[in-house]
Image (cartoon, rainbow, N blue to C red; front, side, top):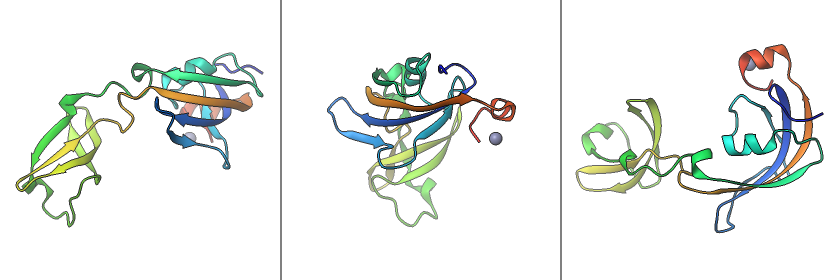
Length: 153
Ligand code: ZN
């Protein structure tokens, strides 16, 4: 059966960045199951998998626009240290939930100054070209409930 909207797809994948460094992989673990056409995975990979079948292998390079977005300097902000009252330890690399105009976003601390904390709200993979090696392990019809919920059960 071919991958189309409202099919549940199982894939094994390895994700490298443009420098060939491995960022993520399902190797040695369970395959990733997702509902095709529901935006469960990045758009560029989802589009490339359309019409593929179990056993197919493909290499896909996903641009930032179809991946996790371009790096946005506007999402890097220096905030008052007072806003972190009650937080024991503020160090570079720490993640926090922050409120933005688009709702809550995850930010990472990139610099700690005497009276200010610099946080970055970009996705960790923003601006990266995503190099996927994918093998389709299984394709099946989604249940009505899965389609209704927009995810795999
Ligand atoms: Zn559900």
